[in-house]
Length: 105
Image: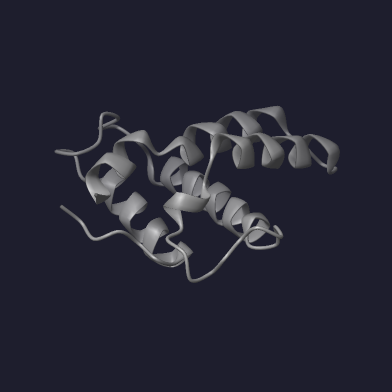
């Protein structure tokens, strides 16, 4: 098992490695551009998350990512120009992290 990441960079690196590892990823044919876009979307989400009043940098990052936070972020994207629906969909896919989360604990 991988140790739980404590910073956005650690989580992004683990997520990127997960996507690049054909033994781990269900999407074995992801292009470099797709991986770059997923990590970029996550990085934007982490930047936004760190501005939220409830965010505590010392707490484990994954514990602070909830369905409610994702919903608030998608609403933030929808109300902030320019909002591209395809980007919102990509972000939702990337932020879900179901497989990554199961490999961390």
